[in-house]
Length: 149
Image (cartoon, rainbow, N blue to C red; front, side, top):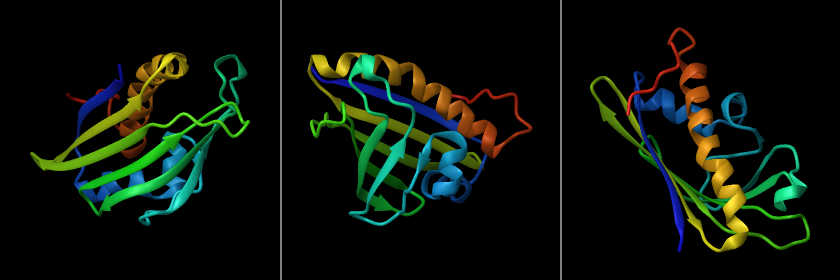
C-alpha cells in the first residue's frame, strides 16, 4: 500500500515570499538541500545530500518539474536510489493558499510503494517537518519556529 506524507502549515508571509523560497535554488539551499532547481515546466534538476548506503541511497534526488502555477502550486518528481541506475519514484506537491494576511502551505509527498521505500519514507516523515520548520525560520528569523497547522 502506498504511503503519503502530508503537512499543512501557516506562514505569516504573503504567497509571493513563500513561493520565492520554494522556487529559487539559492533560497531552497538555505532550508532544504543543495540543488540546481529552476521553476520551468519539464526542467530536470537534482537535490543533493550525503549518501546513505545503509538505506540504498546515493545522496542524489533526481527530479523533474511536473506542474507549475506561479504563486499557487508546484509539483515535481522525486526519484532516488543506490546509484546503480535503479530509481524509486515519488512526487512532491506544494500548494499555496492566501489566508489571513499569510499563506497556508500544503506539502504532499506521495508515491511511496513497496518495501524499498520503508526506510526513506520513515526518514522523510520526520525530515519534512524539520525542513519546513527551517523554512519558516529562514523566512522569519524573528519567530520562535512554531508553524501553525
